[in-house]
Image (tube, rainbow, N blue to C red; front, side):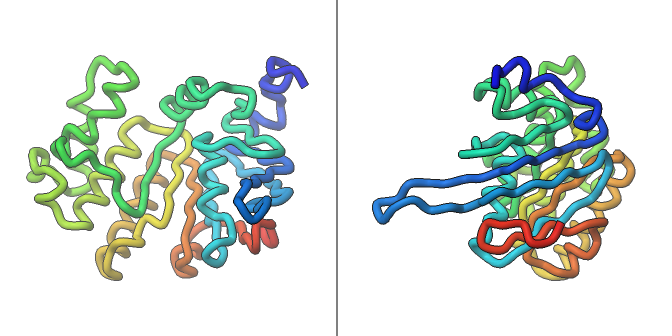
Amino acid sequence: MAPHAEATPTALDAAHALRVDGLGKRVTLPSGELTILDGVGFSIAQGETVAVVGASGSGKSTLLSLLAGLDVPSTGTVTLDGEVLSALDEDGRARVRGAKVGFVFQSFQLLPSLTALENVMLPLELRGDADVEGPARAILEKVGLGPRLHHYPRQLSGGEQQRVALARAFVTRPSLLFADEPTGNLDTTTGQAVIELLFALNAEAGTTLVLVTHDDHLAARCRRQLRLDAGRLVQG
């Protein structure tokens, strides 16, 4: 199929933040070909909150990478906010992520040489916004880190680092947020506080949330669950 035809949004795509059709991922190992995902298909409505659940090795993180355009599928398509990611080159997928997507990771992924404020300003700078400091300061205040703006990640607790990561994810006002085990490196009490903040920010912004987790209590906070088992979608 011609890329231009494939990339044309349809009325159906416009109603969805994400649409996945026949998605598969295979890798070649010395022992042979390994199928990580096989024939996965679903759609996620604008503003929906969805948890991706399943045992370790079921394909959750691979699916998240494909949904965000960080990796390319072996078969099938991912349509993100009307754009078919497989029809785009790496620069095109990066453009879509920069314009529409926010990320929160288990390991925080803060740049150690930048302060909290500078970490949150970074995606705005990369996007070319005229005002980067104002929005970054405002959202750090909102997540309770006003007094910690000029601290470096090593000077912050795990919970504080994840709040910086949340601020960085939401500062660009993304239409879609991917969160990969956002409480995985936090103790129970701190993790619960971070989750309350994540859902509050998400509700306020009306963002579509796709959350990968092994925590059933966290998954239950979402409107819907997608369950993977050995690379296949068994609940969606």
